Image (cartoon, rainbow, N blue to C red; front, side, top):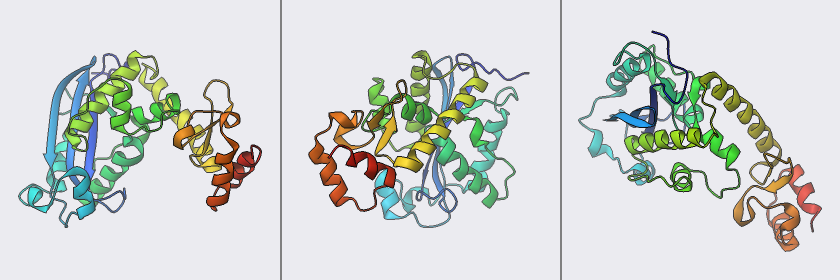
Amino acid sequence: MAADTNLRTARILVFDTETTGTSVTDDRVVELGAAYFQAGRRLRLHRMLVNPGLPIPPGATAVHGIGDADVVNEPGFAVVGARLALHLTGAVFDGTPPVLSGYNAAAYDAPLLNAEFARHGLDARIDAARVVDPYVFMKWHHRALRGRKLTEACEHYGLTLNNAHTAAADAQAAGELLWAMVEAGLVPVDLEECLSEQSRINAICDAEFAEWRTWLYRDRETGELRMGAGKHVGRKPSEVDPGYFRFVLDKMEDLPAAVRAEFGRYT
């Protein structure tokens, strides 16, 4: 059976992880969440705790609430990863692989899971370039928001995210957010068009970050420079009090040269 490539009708597997830290190569999964969606409706929700095989740092526990005692009797990733692989291939349904999605999953969760697969001798891999990532479209269409974390993105769309930083809740919220953005016309419905647009957006955003870090960005419609961080985010530099620029130029020694030059025009 051919895979459905229409995001309005396709079976979508939204995944999320909670981990021992933020390194995609060295840190380990302690919780895996997965939510199946189709036509905007949640079909299934899975939550799996994972024994990472090493102590969970207190800083990580402070974020997601999972400590060593919570996972001491849980299976390791060799077991949980093998189960996940069945979902990736579509074996738990009709053998047709689902469309994969996750919030910031292309840059974070997918490579982290791939490192875990390799670490435990599992053949499964996730092609990050084929993960539909609502975060990419949030940072493009909603760059003027002060925050674009999953909780903030859901609030912007009037969605409720209970139990944030639990993998299952985050996976469900990310699926609801994706549907809201598809319905709003901000995420292309055709999968290949969506992934192509996602790649294009990432290239532009990466170039912006290389030049200005988060300080500045170009308006998505007019191309005008706008403030990219802090209380003035979204405003044109010409609309900002010159005293702000003098303060930043004086205090921030590591400003990129392009930012320093642009801010200097308004002092």
